[in-house]
Length: 212
Image (tube, rainbow, N blue to C red; front, side, top):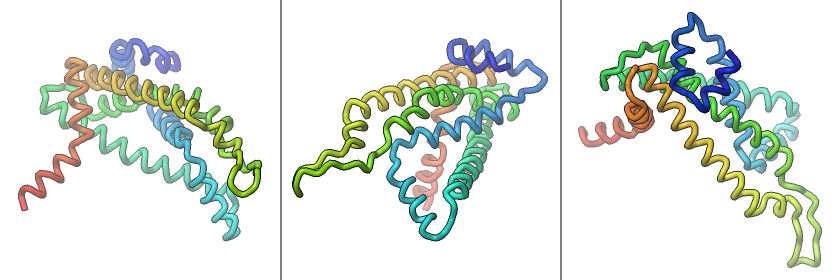
């Protein structure tokens, strides 16, 4: 089963079919939890997080409790969004002559997010290697050198941004294939299903406004 985490990246349809044909899939929930962790690690703005920890210390709340609370909250939100998205992808896919079941689509959406797990390979090191430093060297009142800003300058931002773009595109490709395989139609229809599912709330809002 763990081999599927690697093969889904290069052979998404064949791997997804093997997963769908299996009697049980035990990895979809761990995948979602790792995706939630990857999303947290991908937040390169440490300032807000440090401010939150400082505020917690000021009120006598241990940082471990704050971190645990953030993890629980992100996990709950991730699960809610996942179930809503998977069900919507099932419903929209059915309108496009798809034959997948809600269970198939839950698996397909979860496994389609696997590229975000591989992003941990650079997101976790970035958390430790690119923090904002407090060691500021001052030269009078007008000039100062902040090693944290130098370490997270343009070059680092460009590299991180390029990697994020690669993961975003890879996620789009993989999830289009996994959703397409779950519904037994083409990957292009899978992409259309993902796009329509993503913009469905906007379409509903526009329709509601026009109906008023």
